[in-house]
Length: 192
Image 1 (cartoon, one colour):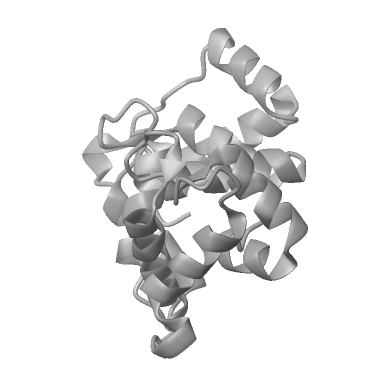
Image 2: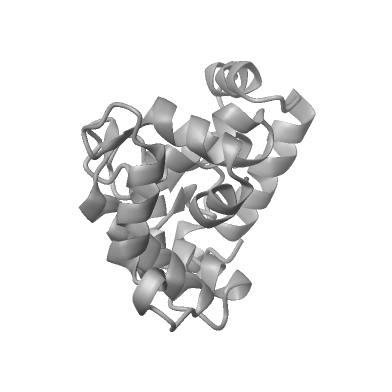
């Protein structure tokens, strides 16, 4: 996973029965699988916390040609549920499960949560433009002119998906639009 830590921070962080119960309830992982994920997490993050710089290192492994920092900023903010500046194991595994295990609607909902930068339940033009730019950076896309310009692409997507006419996307509009358009789903929710 790419977490690094000094020898001083190599302490074992155990899982409580409450954490295991929560993760079993919220994910499809068995207790054995949860413990295996936890063991791997602690191997990479011995202090039990994943910091933003460590997340960036992980993403660099998957996107070596891109600039991962802008996208990681938004992913980190969405995953750090308690806003303490660190991702603990529960937050980490809940996000892994949200993006990999659940049905399409739930995975799209998790993608929406990353895009909703302001956390107001809507994605406006500025947020979508910002995230499209971050996605372009992530994959090393440099052609950002004409129809590929982030502001133009954001305006086109909102115009296509906005059913209420408020020039914003709520979660239901986002999910419905991505379900019905595989190209948009690939652009807006590439892990889905």
